[in-house]
Length: 211
Image (cartoon, rainbow, N blue to C red):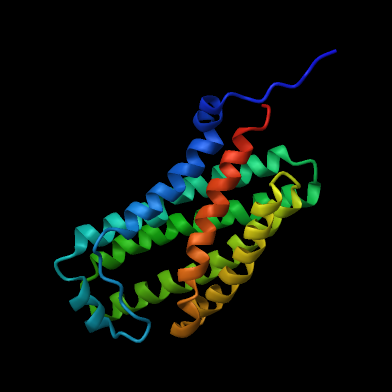
């Protein structure tokens, strides 16, 4: 007769999905502490250039920490969910939404770098609009990833509820970013923290699963 042995805590926290999940939130939080400008949807190209003037380094660093590096976390957690679950539907949904969201996130980082260096008002306005609309598309994909995480059957009940709440909130904020509606976009202040909890929580839970 054999008994299952829970993995040691230090092993859980040093496994790849757990480490990446924790790093995902750490990177985002670090990025948000950077005092970089945050133009509004209604700003003109000239206003955007004026706001970014003298803050190029901070702006690029923020995009690296909130879009570039987190793209890796999204891909790793999503693909681990897809590989670990026994549900074909959840596996496909996690793979498609997670990888697509990761690709968009990294694209946003590249667009952010270009925006920080934009020299003309027209270019600045176009790049800022692209970054914002891509954010909206990514939020819809992240809502799909949250639903996929619930469908895997791998998460504890409290994290399932959090993922569902995140899916609703981030889809609403996604409408704001996709269609440049400032009021709805402010829902990101709700969906953002929920996203960090879901990605990090899923990573830690997956770190406890036998390989």
